[in-house]
Image (cartoon, rainbow, N blue to C red; front, side, top):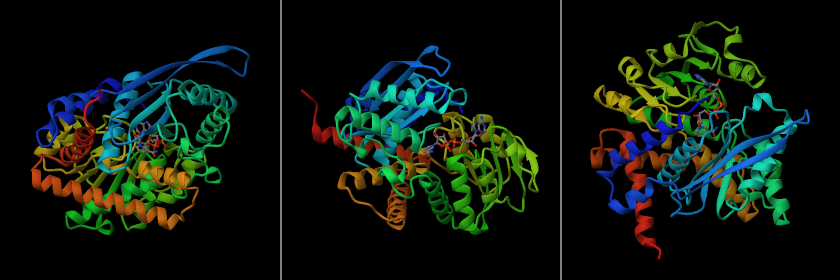
Length: 419
Ligand code: NAD
């Protein structure tokens, strides 16, 4: 997966500019909110299995921390750059403010291709990276979580490394841990569950329900496959999905569990042998469906795609899938798009619930976690729809950014400027 860091940052600032007109934010605070508070670049010398030494590059960025500790994931990918990490940390700060988590935003990453690295090499990179950023993170300072190509295994190594330096076990320094180490039930599927909840809410808002809806999902990884399975459980007909190898389409519906099992066992969409037509990722975006869910990479809904898209509703599971030009076209064509900062917030909400359980040294049930997630997301959705109506913003994204800016601006106004 690739992200263009420069344009993600530019797009986020454009989205902020569009919301400024509706938000109660002073010019000075608005300027501050456009820039990260700090960004660290670390060099990570590491011994490869073959005895060679290589230096990897890592980053951690903290953004908009007036409302609480910073929070955001760590990704391992060749395209990681300082600009990308800054942009994604900024988006996290707005996401956390929108769903009223007591956090600022953060993001981290290491420039590497995990496909070329052994398990032991990934472990050494993770430990060295954690040492590199450990003065910046902490359970009350900045709490990392998984992102692309990192998961519970890497979070366990991060927690262990941090704890070894501190001299005692500190589970709450990261979230997305294995359940045995203080992870919460429900975290793995949380982002996809959130996408399913939000899809149901936007359908209901338009007088529809999942059981009369057809859905196309671009990307069938963690988020896409859980959104697909949980929407199918709610009655939706998932007619198409894809991965980096291409897409599949069946108007009668695809078996969401069968495809997920194949992917989880290391397979690819290209190898799927169930009944279906083969389509490209580009075709998938233009299918005549009720709901289109981009759940893979950034910037896929461009102006051209937006002009030809035939879905009635877009729900952004991926981070930054729609460009600002495409947003304008969707507004003109009256196609509602639920923005990423709400649609994919399920992951960070359940990360927050994990952190709360860790700090209280208490364990909730899966039912409690899922109920809390559903309540928080539903409230945030209702507030966004109210803001859309009350402020008459052009689209849902502007309404969501307006609410997030208001939260941040209030915290700045109440705290004042130091010194
Ligand atoms: P993942 O790596 O598990 O899955 C990504 C999917 O996208 C895979 O099916 C992959 O083959 C496909 N893909 C990659 N490149 C593609 C391309 N060029 N065209 C089409 N498909 C492509 O990742 P994920 O965790 O499911 O994340 C998906 C998106 O959701 C990302 O934008 C991520 O930032 C965002 N997100 C994830 C979480 C989370 O909790 N995992 C939370 C918030 C946002």
